[in-house]
Length: 218
Image (cartoon, rainbow, N blue to C red; front, side, top):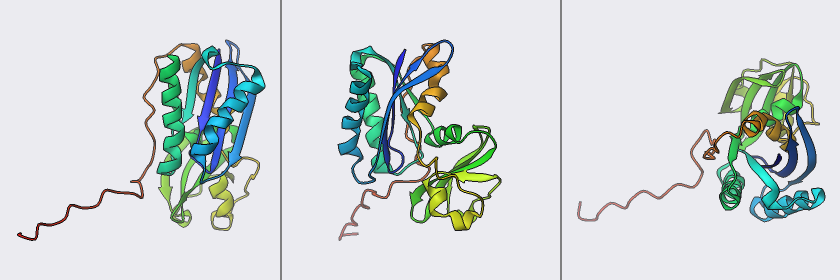
């Protein structure tokens, strides 16, 4: 079964295509562009590129997997809206996966801290043991993160490496599309019903509705 994966929870815009079989998964194509200000412009072309690279048409897809964050409001909703719209148009299920989980899985064995940039001098973070999440996800200032890991991954870990004080693996900075597919493989194989893609913000968006004006008569 062919599965498309999307993630826009970080500055990276990622699209990947994989094949889920009874015995495992096979990555077919993956594209990533790091551009924090152009998620909306970059994602659709990335999707087309991975489909073209594998010679796959959208109607051949069996499911779509999307990283649900945590991540900044504007970028994150681009990926989720795209995944939901494609799933509805194609009549196929969509599955949501925590974006930090994809980084944690790609980081491999051992106890690993995953941290991505949450802006406002904060990070989104979680801790993993052999690719499985054991704490988090949470958002905090780097100095307030309880580091219970042997190494750290993610662009937030790299940005605040001096504060975390543990080795940084800079080979794993952003969510892997193949890892997203692997994490949803059991649902795909079982043909589980699709899920509503609910974004994991962990805090309120920067843009809020203005407070109602007080009446001059009150």
